[in-house]
Figure 1 (cartoon, rainbow, N blue to C red):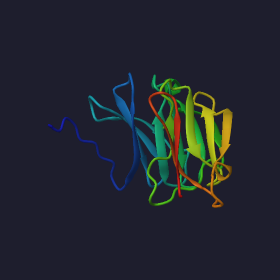
Figure 2: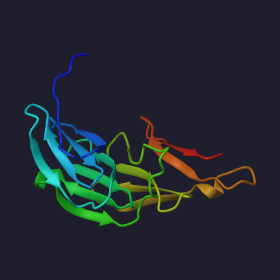
Figure 3: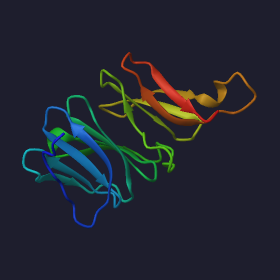
Figure 4: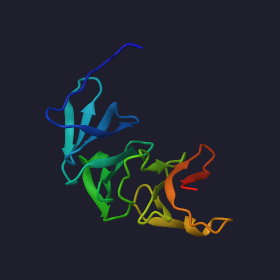
Length: 171
């Protein structure tokens, strides 16, 4: 392939990225907690979000690009309205399990865009929320989902194209 664009952010290390459907832009999270929205056609920073104070660990746009979900190193989950200059809609403190170095998939959105899944608030729980509100719809205790005497803990959760939720566990 051919490189089409290049984007830079001086003295910042990118930690997460998500493409915005229907917007021709993408969000990039950084180690200092900043989220910058870059325009693809101009490489210009269109918006900057400074809500998080620690490393951004997850970024995910809703399918239509109107909402941006983010998580940080402390496990905070935030929802921003991309149609209103990335105005903060809601934050759930300590919603996610703090990121482990070997896990890179933090947030997963369902194929229809209505639900988002993540591990947290403990390693034994997978939580599913409504993408547009962060209202909780389901909590799954994976420690009780075993056929052996070992206690399972979730590593990450991911939606499949058929809306099934896959959960990777440690055993």
